[in-house]
Amino acid sequence: MSELIYLDNNATTQPLPEVVKAMMPYLQSEYGNPSSVHQFGQRMRHAVETARRQVADLINASPREIVFTSGGTESINLAIRGLCGVAKDKRRIVTSHVEHSATRNLCQALTAEGYDIVEVRVDGGGQLDLDELHSALTDDTALVSILWANNETGVLFDVDAVAAICHERGVPLHIDAVQAVGKVRIDVEKTPITMMSMSAHKLHGPKGVGALFIRRRTRVAPLIVGGGQERNVRGGTENVPAIVGMGEAARRSRDTFDTSIQQMTKLRDRLEHGILEGCPGSVVHGNAAARIPNTTNIGFAGAQAEGILILLSQIGICASSGSACSSGALEPSYVLEAMGVDPSSAAGAIRFGVSHVTSVDDIDRVVQAMPTILARLKPPTVTQHR
Ligand code: PLP
Image (cartoon, rainbow, N blue to C red):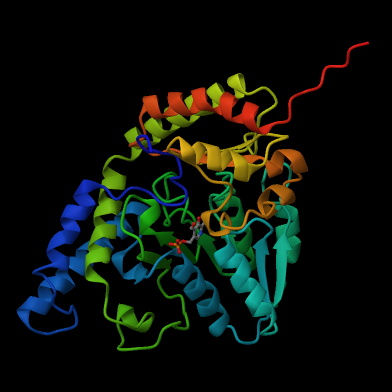
């Protein structure tokens, strides 16, 4: 296979060399337990607390508001179950039609436990219907849980507006910011959200580690009960190497935020314009809304996403159709369906996600390859001769 062109950065990102370097000692000689009282253990405690501060700094939180978890999915589970667990008399959860499967399937499971799940509609641009959200909030509502940035289209919800509505009604708000962290400036002091989920591997950190921001004085029922780690919210010996890696990824993201946004925007726009120009009939889904700078979801009506992905993969190009979790079995995207996208365009929808390590050459090679791939997949147009 030729050299890899990796445009699947919404699925996961390449761990940065400085992240790997920061983790190495904790995989080898620095193996103590952060809960041990001896000096060796306390060095690990110091490393974990440094990482906590680095993650907190990225979103302008206090380190005491950060709980480390095993990733985005666990953070979402802890937030939703944790808030339900302390509001036992409330049975309603308000969410949206376009959530990641972590939220969607958890909510589905909660219906079996007697919860009433209300999914708020999105419009054609992928934006949340704020009036519908407003009317969905009853006295019985335990929480609202919505995405910040959509993992399939990159469309950003207006979290400030959602937070204002929830705050006014006194309803806790959890935000799934897994795709937004590092691509949107986040300041939890300015936006009154209650909890926010994050994942390191979407931020050039390691897999299997994430964090949940829990605003001070918020009560939460633990998901994993154990030895009292993470202030009794998440039991279990901390994954020190991964936590250190997440801290370093957060530090780097904060230090290079502006340049990395500029780079991603430039690359994504070059890719989008190149494809739209070279592939007549292709459309960008969700481009009328504000989006994260690295993502484009392009519909190629008349072709099947699976076929496009296979042909791209054969020439070393990694992309995806919608979320990685569902790409094993390519079902129609419920996100595009909820936006009312034309079914033929949705069936041929490909998600490309660049990162700051993507090169211009990578982009140009994808732009060049796409028309040939489509020509191989689409049935030839029959010209009628009279
Ligand atoms: N939420 C969103 C929006 C995501 O894109 C993902 C991963 O694709 C997750 C949650 C799950 O995160 P993790 O892979 O860390 O469990």
